[in-house]
Image 1 (tube, rainbow, N blue to C red):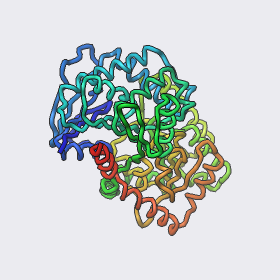
Image 2: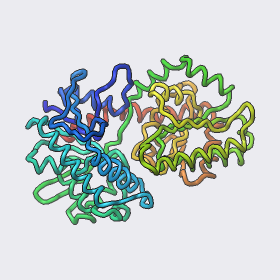
Image 3: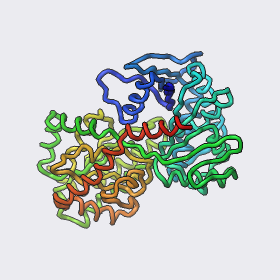
Length: 455
């Protein structure tokens, strides 16, 4: 059995007592089976870069990490990854800030990471690289003589060609995918966009089955929708139903219906549109005033990027306006929490909500949508209101889907969710859970790695 080597932008050994996220659970399980290695940036910034990665072993998995120089952090991470690729891939050309030095830093850092990784690799390794930060990493490894199977999974949306080509250097980035044997995406739409970009941007031949003929090398692009571990989520929800935090939240609601949103603080999540749709709900359906609460957890994100501070201030103004207009001495319509919570606590919050309001403007998958459903009480489940512009919407046919830009339709759909019969809620929940349980995070990892191994 080949050893698995996973590479991601951020990497750290699990901390004692911390509950890992779904991706970490799946990758750790796959790595443990093969005695594998997880390699990546350790999250620190320094001017004294080590010659070799720092290594530690936990639970049969080796973790190899390196710091980044400050200039590389500024250009590779804050610059090209977060100010160019992230907005571009979420169709926000207006927010893209391209600079040549960003692209140069992005390529340089990927070359640096490849050099650090070379000392760890063995000839028969199976290498799985993750996400948009590391697109050129495979090319750097090939140029260094690595012939092992290379897989790449792209976790965020892939834009259509007319969006991608607004970015200088787009063609060079497309050619970097030539290094990979297998390239995975969250949805068929992302896979179609990618193949169209390859065909139109490079001129190489693309087959209907996703095969890309680069000349002397072939790649294959396919859809591998990522899932969660529903049994883990259900266990956390069940164990947390009577914790002090949950009891406090229940008491504070005073039998009101709670809706919930859980997102990173990012312009792609559609939080201004969500708040305005909630405001419209209060106007159009005045019977909801005093009877419904929106709990929005907006976890801080990229706080050293100025644009994200602007988003935070704008959201605080909107929440202040809505609460200032509608609040009473014993009720506040929006509870806005701009802080991070432990995963266990978030799952407990999700379990209490009658409506899950997950309405990003664009998202590769959105695992919170699946976690919301998995956390529900099977005998009295809540209703998921989900943006149609998520990968999750392509998987979950029975949930209520909305266009997050249409605040009138979103408010109407929320009202439908609040008044849905128990019988219909159970039917919709069971249909969605059949997919979530069958196509879980382990199914996703095994399916990708089996396909990669076959190359």
